[in-house]
Length: 115
Length: 113
Image 1 (tube, each protein chain N blue to C red):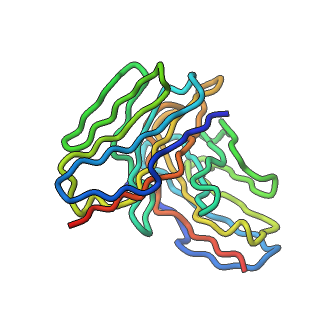
Image 2: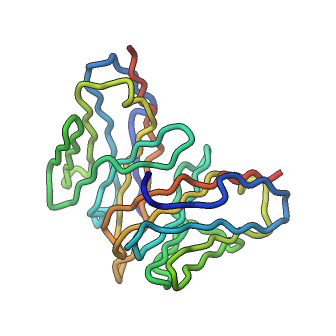
């Protein structure tokens, strides 16, 4: 089955700096890659996603890049703010047969924004 | 607020017992997914239903089962509970069977004593 590796497990950056979180996946059939932000006591919140026919996608301060050949994708957050502090998860989706799928998640990155 | 609702928020029970967790998907979503989040295993996909039918199974134990009803709400049944079943259980919903955005509910925290 699919395996998703995520690095780093903890990332501390100064407010206003950029943060980059990287993930690799194992199954070349995966074609959907979402990123989730989880704050303490809440469910994961979808912040951005990318599909395998696209190399890069941007939404304001957040961008995601995908390298299908190397099977890795990254989340970039620019101009970080205190409210960006949370745990971020990458995931990969590998539809099987009739199109059913569940997400395979990385272990998460605890992003800490230092004031 | 994702629009996905889950009840109860917290559940405390004893080993060997059976519990039922409930999920209502976002309006218009036909797919419901169940995930388990624990410190040692992370976020793991358990099972998916689409329009009342089971579509995919992940790492779901035989002691666990789920169903999706005609009104599209779903229930996850956990039986013969063990200490290791203590975790957060999330429901997510999406509009289609596969490859569309999944929106997560606030979760149910299960504690087995």
